[in-house]
Amino acid sequence: IPSRFSMLTGLHPRQVGIESNLIASLTPGARSWIRELHDAGYRTMLAGKTHLHPHIGDIRDREPLMRALDFDLIDEATGPRA
Image 1: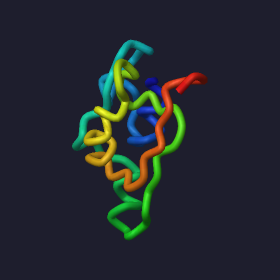
Image 2 (image 1 turned 45 degrees about the vertical axis):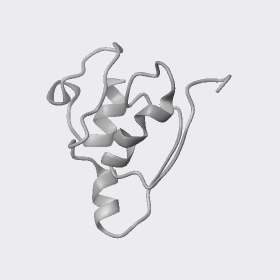
Image 3 (image 1 turned 120 degrees about the vertical axis):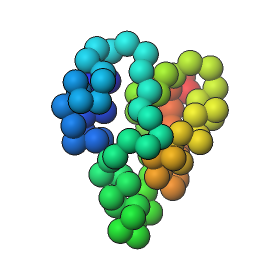
Image 4 (image 1 turned 60 degrees about the vertical axis):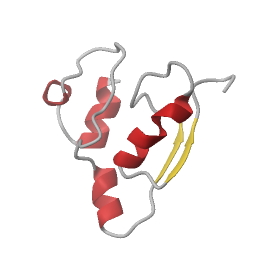
């Protein structure tokens, strides 16, 4: 999880506030290269298993967070049985 947050934001895991694989969530206002692409006019897509939020319950409930992170299309999975 720390490396995924770091790759998305360009920040060190300590700067993001995540240093272990505990349940964590990226904040909606977080800067990211996805936002940069979106602001430049590209359509962005999230696909697969992301670990950008806790995969507990129905992940469709996290769609507003993914949209706030500027993903236009969302096809997220939680694991092999999803």
